[in-house]
Length: 438
Ligand code: S3P
Image 1 (cartoon, rainbow, N blue to C red):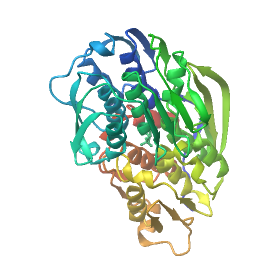
Image 2 (cartoon, rainbow, N blue to C red; image 1 turned 90 degrees about the vertical axis):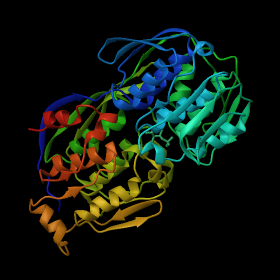
Image 3 (cartoon, rainbow, N blue to C red; image 1 turned 135 degrees about the vertical axis):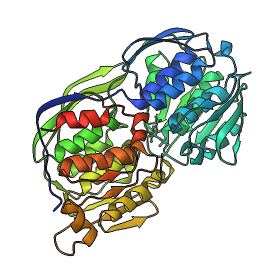
């Protein structure tokens, strides 16, 4: 019912470096006294803010080329307190992981803050367990700015009520910085990049089950080399576009394929999407490969709760694929979407409704039937007839990019109120989008 209007043949692209790994490459460099070499670093606002924050505390940053850096750390005990606030911009990962690390370094005093979107996001999820480890961390209520006085923390066991890699990594970094033990359990595995980096540096993690582990000192942090692959969350926009082509395919090379991140591939395949993986390999402890998305007919598929953490960031663009699925689209168990850069449940529901799609909203998700010719609303009719539609992006990069994919796939006009947020994770997105289509 929604027309497909794009073609792409033989187009190969690279996407910028993985955001999660880029943040972590800075944090592990800080812990490793000496010089760490990082390539593929995502030069976007979010990880650059993390890099700048630690450069103000003594991390020496030497840019060698595009995405290539030498980070030289004086060692965690020789970091100094920054003068003035540390601004993490739009980045939940930046502020939450850095808060953990700084809470565990005795003598560091810092105030961590961010933009209007970040200052609305919940911080109690890290403040409570950090306080239980003995940390001194105070917010404005449960929001940033966060005032931290670093100190030696106590060993800690935590059963997390949410599957969040930010919470998990925050506590792991706090334990590492403080040379103390952490026993951590979550119900569903969240992304495990922090665990992979810790192991890559030669540390052991004791597992009781795949979602319950313990880390203990002495930790080993020696300067290493991190090669950051392309971000599957950024590749996802082009994979969905590839599936929605009228004809052809798109190949995205050098993408991180950590199984705790590849839920988007499972979901798209369950919906009938044809995605081929080529050239699988392991780099710096992380699986990597090339992904080819081929024009496909899509249909409804149930998305089980157990897949949610592994595709949480991709739900906006998965929803765009869902608009083309025979039988409609449904996402549930996704309450965490309300705590992202925007409330992504309400952002998606409201934008789809403004285009005339009938959407049922739930506290933890939404659903819609396949937009059909019968009973088409006047707004949908107007959009499908090329009269344009308006999208509110709510300071959220992924909402903006998702609707740009819808515009590219259909060729129908859509006006986005503001797209500058895309700089937080994917500089050059629009140019790349123009470059893949014929
Ligand atoms: C991230 C964890 C996820 C994800 C975010 C990056 C990370 O957040 O949404 O974009 O790098 O640890 P939560 O831990 O809040 O689910």
